[in-house]
Image 1: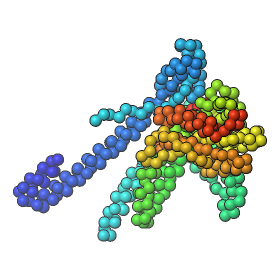
Image 2 (image 1 turned 180 degrees about the vertical axis):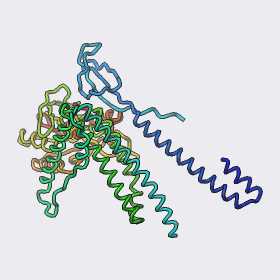
Image 3 (image 1 turned 90 degrees about the vertical axis):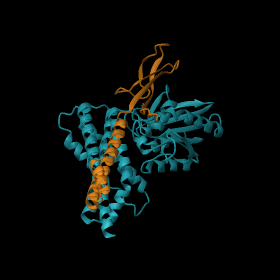
Image 4 (image 1 turned 30 degrees about the horizontal axis):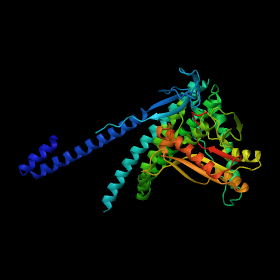
Length: 106
Length: 341
């Protein structure tokens, strides 16, 4: 920013060699800043993907009572996980799926 | 002009250098995670690192195809030997792991192997380009880099899924078969597969899938052959359900229907299914669930598990429209059954 202001000042004063030097400095700085912002965004996207939540949907085959909870190691689809609170039927893991982080509304 | 090319090549080399570093990090992360899981689950007394390193360098020499007759059998045999050795090596490093955990660990080691292989190939081409300063080597590598990195990121995601035992997108077919034979008696069939029988409006349906819940794809070709032999080839239809790669712009979880054996891999299983279907004159139908390469090897997305209902509807429609009461239909759920019993 400072180099850009300097460049503009030199341009207004008609000092073209200095204007070119500061102009190049300002351009390189801008490119570097933009590139690091892009890199940061990319890294954040990767982190977001890693932070994806995995859910286990547990369901009673008898009455259809459904519980959605966070996946725990050892869960697998069709695993029996106890009795249904409503009808005492067998509760089973019906689905295990990744929940994408909600996209921000603009 | 010449100077411009030099600058372009330097910029391309800088980009490739960055990608090589990222691939190296991904490879190292996958290796550390694999070692951690081997120590935690396997509880080996010896250090698993040297044996893991040797597994990561394993290779397969494909059979000679100058005389192609019988090459599928040779390939199948080599793949059987490779799988058996890989599994026994992993079981050796992780002596306390149960069979399902061994299967998951094997998949985890394979994902680390793939990342190691990609890193080494890209590094080789990068160093070759740098050494010879050949524009064609450099630019070709730069052109393919986004696709290579996409695949590498997919394998990186796969390591977490296999380490924790999540179902992956590729397991869509296995999930469908598991739902069809829910609460039904299952029996083991050839090879590493399970089959269960159900019925729909008077039609017998035998559904099969790989044996879970460990990461496993089984050998659906052998299983279909066994079931056809048991029923004297009297099946009216084979329906294969599998995950398929979507094109950019297509929706994840989209269901499509076609003709033929829907199964990926090197082609040996497809060959067996096509042989058996042709021998007995059985029509083969395919139903696929669309997804990207990343989605196929990472934890199953909700859109994919939600696609089970439309797939079931299509299977029902196909069976009711094209078979009569009392006939037999084979439904093969293809794919990795990690996290699915």
